[in-house]
Length: 242
Image (cartoon, rainbow, N blue to C red):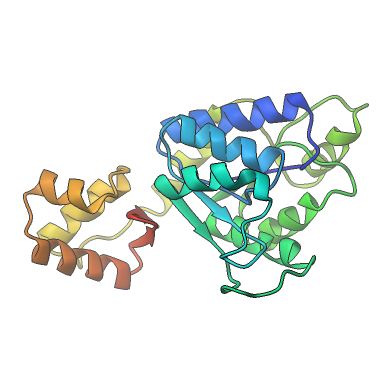
């Protein structure tokens, strides 16, 4: 789930982003955002405080964390998730990188929650990418007199679903999961058991090996098959189902 919004957000937006990420993480949902000021940072923190997994997509080189004030947050993210960038070490930052990286933020997610955005907000870039990628889009309705609500209210008028609480998203996830139930008939018994654990949110290799009483060779063979088959993807030190 991508949670995004304005950098110069209101306290209302901060609270919504934090609690949405916190509650979704409690249900095993991986949270994706851009590690920027405001809504992004609140979403990452909410997820981490709930013990969840979060992914930060940088608009800078992988060795150039921005903003610097989020360095402590970045360290926490690396403990329970991943920080990724399409720009290698030493690449000079360009202003437009932040907009084009938003296609990755929405692309990694099954759905996008937009918490706050003004009418001229850069958040519309991610919104447009999500529309083109066919993602489910949610937006937080708010006071129609507030500038920071004008963008999200516009999205609700156009294509977004209203976000009232996490049940709105969890119901949609449940419906989508039923529609794309994976065919596991081509997997052997060990591969199926490993996949089901990862699907249930248990993505740590040591824990999978312990639960299934596998040898290192058995696990490595199974996880390689699952990765090559597109069943799972590695994020940091863990795997998640696709």
